[in-house]
Image (cartoon, rainbow, N blue to C red; front, top):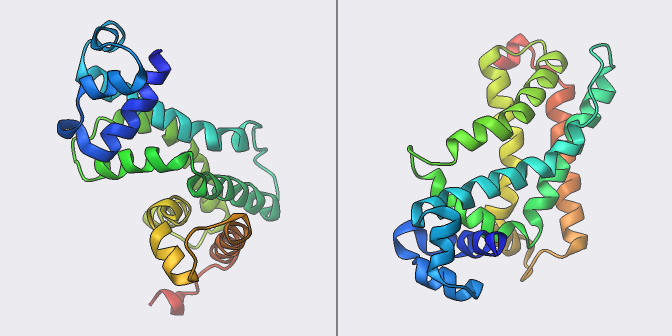
Length: 209
């Protein structure tokens, strides 16, 4: 019941926001009573935080298996690029999935708040993955400053993550009503091609100017 309340809350908070969603409606859809929300989460705010934490943990699970094995410091560039491509392709595929829709709606609202409750969960669960990507990019692109490495990782992650938020635009551009497996595979191929291009071609001094 606790997990059912969380999944229901993710959808309703994502669609209506914190103020618009009611614990009464969440409990009703989950097939229980409001007392169960009080018992498990101490109230609406606790349920909201539990929903936010569950989303971050799910995002972390999606990418974690790509980093489950330690990376030897002396691996070659091709292997590093494969590692980065694998995690970004995995994230991109997840964002194209139906499972990601209610999660992405919730996150989209939270992204607009400088006081997001998700910040602490991102620091705990997502930061290790981001740090691993930064390490790979730093080694693959020694021409980049630390600031440029951060910007590059942000750009690469944004490409993968935005596949959900830009789904409608993607459908309009591709002149389809939805992204099926075939089109999804094409999009992921282009994502990976862009990642390889960014990681394999250092910018010349002339290019930087």
